[in-house]
Image: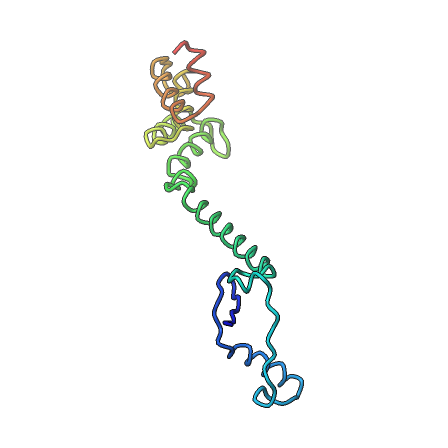
Amino acid sequence: MARSIASGFYVIPDDGQLYDAIADAKNSRRGSTTSKDMPARELPKTASQESGHVPKDNTIMQMFGLVGLAVLFIVFWTVLSSPQDTAQDTPSEGDGLAELGYKYDIGGGVEEDNVEAVRLYRLAAEKGNAVGQFNLGSMYDNGEGVPKNTIEAAKWYRLAAEQGDTDARERLAAMGF
């Protein structure tokens, strides 16, 4: 009758040497004689071991294996589903220009200057910054720092709205565009 030992998820056939090594280790801890002096004791086998299946006491090992697979799946899914272009997560030059333009627009820390605000908003808007586009449209809509121009205001509002700016969408709707 061939003996087998379950290791993880696999059943490894054993010619008896492993059982002898286990018996040697147990006997050496107890201070008794080696296995050469004593016959190796055969461990009782369950029905699943006899049939070559993994014994039931390895279900904890299987659970750790499944948990490990789940963790790997989550990690890979997170990495693969994360946006490849992270440029939107980092501030751009357009963000800084729009913010500085806003400071000149409201006089926050600098002297209020609508002409300088329009210049900075235009630089930000031309770089594709939605805040700069909306604020430049607002300056044209209200005639602040530039002559009032509804068509030019609608142009900048539309560009901001295309990037998801809800305020720009509302302004376009109110203007009838």
